[in-house]
Image 1 (cartoon, rainbow, N blue to C red):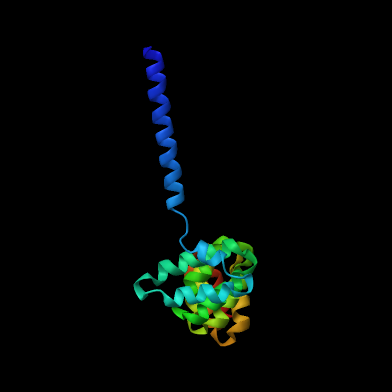
Image 2 (image 1 turned 90 degrees about the vertical axis):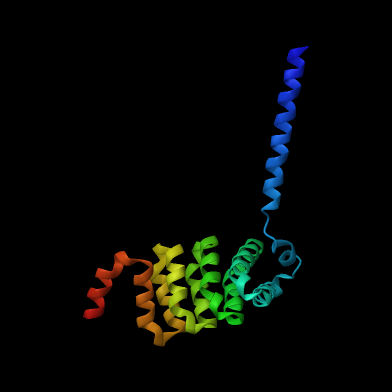
Length: 178
């Protein structure tokens, strides 16, 4: 009898633990996913930008991160367009949006940085730094892509790469002084 009771208690504890683990997983769901999933694919970048621009200034960074993660999960191929739309709507969020998207889609890092820089050229330094930090192996492609859309910012781009990857400074200094 005591073995049955012990087995019952163990089973109850196990079920309660399992239920609480599942509850924790669902509470961490991205709050922007449902809204963005209901949007037609062609309107996803515009809706993402709208959500970021409507966020209160104190919540804008967290909103940008959540919106970009949700939107890129829904349509990974649209990452550059999503970032470009957000960068155009709220230029100060360009580097954050670009870094989050590049982290989720590292193969598109240079395209993402290019889209962000084209939409928010005043933020070119922070964009290059942020994207190079999450995709350091692609620093060359990122710098070249961004320089194509903001050609007058080459010095700022080089400084941004150095800032993101300080180990490159000696090599960059040799090239720049030539």
